[in-house]
Image (cartoon, rainbow, N blue to C red; front, top):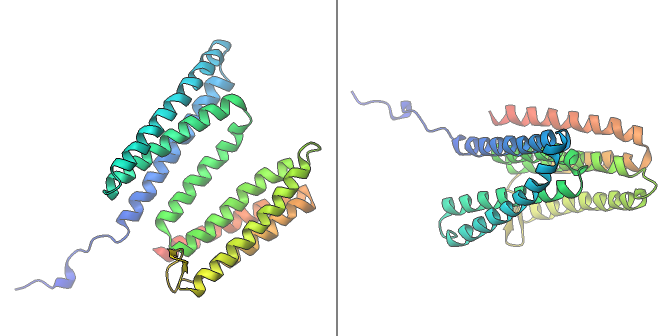
Length: 253
């Protein structure tokens, strides 16, 4: 008796996105581990360890440059093969990260605190772009970047030395949020395209993007009002991100 063709096991539709999410997760863990190693031996280490790592960071920075160059060459040579080209991009990205972090941390140790936050945020955004629909990923990216921007701006906007510059950057960031909403609206009016570039799927719902832009703008404005108010606004924005991530995850499942 012939088997019902509908009873055959179907391949998981989300296998490729899950693989991409796992790659971002592993890359984020490795990057965060490197930052922790720097903190352990270059900041909290003994005198000999600090001196040794001062030289190590120079060597690691040049090693990163070499790795990035290899990745760039491989990406160019493998440009006709999509899978191999991605390998070249990964090597290029790893080299850029190693070189940039090693050089910047050696110049300014305070940057390490920002990197502790930036690496997990980038990792989570990569996972979101791998798992969620494009409009959902864009909305969560806007909210995530806004949260990171608030964390930086509210620490510097009250400084007597750099406060004016960071207030100006806050206004610029608000304009960027408004531009993002305008671009999304213009793209959806053209079937998700901006010129020849397909920004969003045709028929996508732009409402999450508009809401993300509105919430981000409202939260960032508090940076210019009061430091305490912006502190609570940050937590509210973080709660919104968590709630939306849970909602989109359930929706995807």
